[in-house]
Image 1 (cartoon, rainbow, N blue to C red):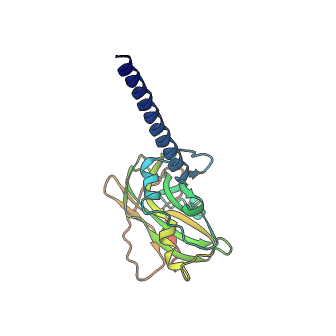
Image 2: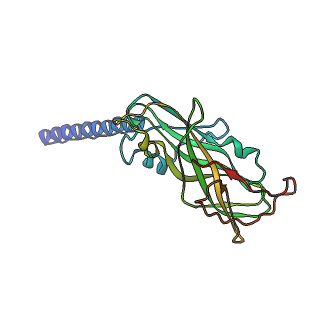
Length: 232
């Protein structure tokens, strides 16, 4: 009986040690994984933790950043901030940025200001990739229209369709590498109001067909005039 009891105690001790070892290894592995996940960077007024779905988007395809010596930053297009012909503007952006093998930048959130007297239901963004050195334009594109419930004369922080620098910069690769300093500027391209009205930036391009409806500005805004943006 004593022998059996001793074996039972010994087995219990060994089992406890094994469980503790596995738990420690799992914790160490989890810490290593968490340390390897890129962390979010944001403006000083919009400090927030990275959401799990945003982190998943960042790492789902593995390291994406191109090889080479490059840098990139993102911001709202400053030209729209003083353009009161635009009913809605993007006032701030949030991005996820990685280092080392995870080097990349994904714009994931934006703060929007509705300067009109009408509620907004959907928004579309335009992005332009420029050179930081001389502001020359390399690439441009648009997001899909996404839901954005925004009351009249209000501001709201909202997750947006991800704008992934590594993906949009692929046409600029030379022999698999990217070099240079880049600036990713974002602005509101189209606004759909809850009453069914649609506002869209006019493009100075004959090939573009633009449909636009009038919107009633907030009393402090000047009268409506066409809002224009440059084309390549």
